[in-house]
Length: 128
Image (cartoon, rainbow, N blue to C red):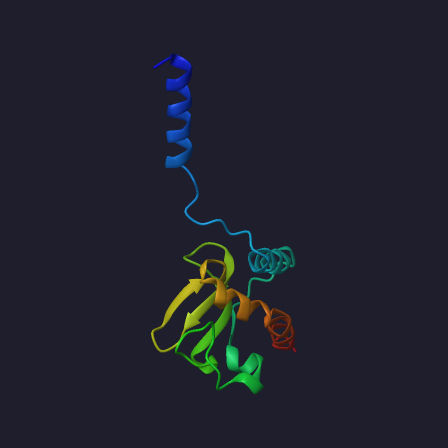
């Protein structure tokens, strides 16, 4: 094998070994990142949480994100994540397990993105 072929093989191996596990670049991913950036740039460092059902009461009895759980069993929060920066977090309330909204399955993100404007409204009302 020539040194050029060997170099190409090594480069391909490095690329393969270092590729990101998930590419977060869907329309929903971009919207979530934009929303988080707006909150961060606004300097909002106050925790806020609300159930998904409260954001859209008409669909409260429907499942959320294609899961078996109804919308009152999930909350969307703006909170300090793992002791670092404030982030949007989706929590399954019965199991008390939160996950960065950006890292949830696509259907959860699609359902959640539709609620971000109402989340912003309720969040701003909480300051009054």
